[in-house]
Length: 78
Picture 1 (spheres, rainbow, N blue to C red):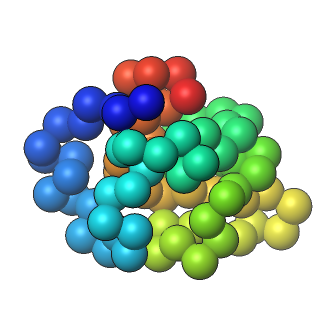
Picture 2 (picture 1 turned 45 degrees about the vertical axis):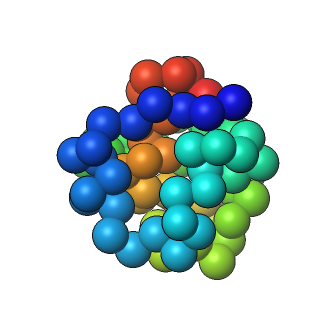
């Protein structure tokens, strides 16, 4: 499934080392999301890309700070 994301969000995602693969590949985009927290962060139940520049390990939780991943979650509930 190809996800539609605003150009502004793409421009803000400067540290992506995967060349926006999450927009075309569900393997990247469908990390299990537990909930969104303030500041455009989401807490993952699982994360497929632990070498991602936007991955933050918070002990038992994984936090994603990727603007594209947050927008996929908000727009597509995925």
